[in-house]
Length: 264
Image (cartoon, rainbow, N blue to C red; front, side, top):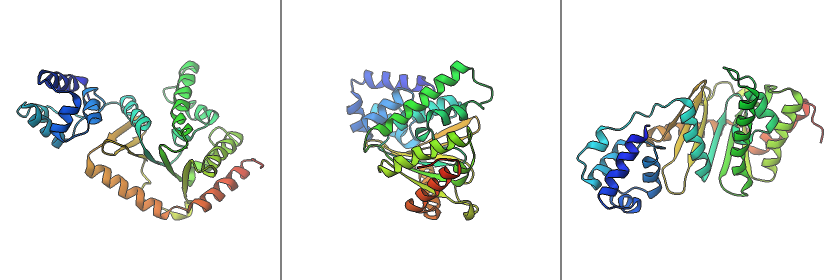
């Protein structure tokens, strides 16, 4: 979403002599949502754009020239990462590998080492650091509340080899044991389930509507249209209902780590 739109909104707001908060009050939106639009981090919904037009007396300019939110994956992931840092609640679904915020350094390196086009050693180091930076949101004892739903394939695929996997799984087990995260496993025996097609992140915030982030190979998209968010949430809830309960998930993770050679 080009920031030309955000810059123009900011210019109109300032020309009208309004602060972000005053515009938010008039347009019935939150100040942080206005700030994200002005900074080019978000595209307003059609309804929000109409409300902004009314609040600023700009006819239908803001609703007519809504940018298409079809940025490349790097930009999308950048937006998703920013949301991740602001979220009060995060629910992850992982289909084939451990979600970024739960990865250990060696696991992250193993995932990044098979990127195509290949990353140089320096690029790989930088990406690992970025991934570990993301995990720092778990350093806070309470916020964000994090749930992860893992397809059993995530535990069974030996990314980086047995030793790396044992360490990675026990890292997740410890986070569950100290009640920092809740992790549920979708067992192979279940067969098909509603989230079988891609990974998914649902995020909630204190002062703005929830968003979802969906990722595939070389593609990723942040969705904030309420109807879409609701559909993803419905699929997540349906899948969660079929997952192993927390204790059984923990037992399966421990057993899998043991199979990889971890000994308590």
